[in-house]
Length: 210
Image 1 (tube, helix red, strand yellow):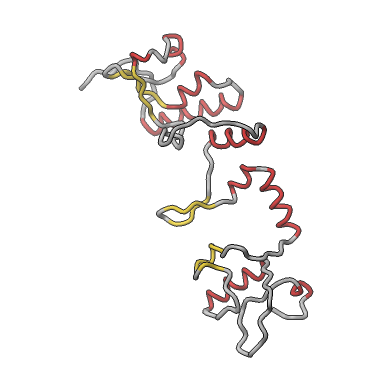
Image 2 (cartoon, rainbow, N blue to C red; image 1 turned 60 degrees about the vertical axis):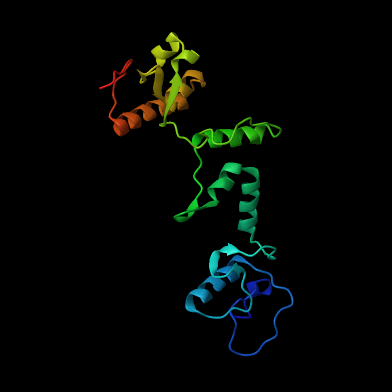
């Protein structure tokens, strides 16, 4: 990186040159200098200062001084104002490595709720199936009398076995949610995907043991 570059006045050059030089007392990082550090590590070049945790170039050390560009500042503000947009920029550590964060519909709905209603309480226990999707089958005991006969008539698919209702989550959600135009489209898509996945294209009211 040439020293006569106008942008160099605030960008730290991480590549260690073979000649002696005085190390800067304060390092100010930028996207360009971080990219230069990544390329240097790939080429096996030593660095004057390493901003990463070991050789994990996707994990930065804490408390780095960073100079943002105008575009990065605008993106930072958008992340602050839109939690769903911010989540789309995040990565999750999984057994397969870092994976992009993909929100489910109910997660987006709740984040939008929190955006409009800051002081909200989410009463929910641990391990209660919050990460299930709409196609997941659930069971409901008949003796609980949760589903009325009128509600059962509105459900496209369910079956009964050993005094237990078996039905997908989207059918239960459809009973209580607002019947908006968008939801009606989603509901039809859920039914199509469910039928293609499980091969059940008709409604079963009872199922006897084979």
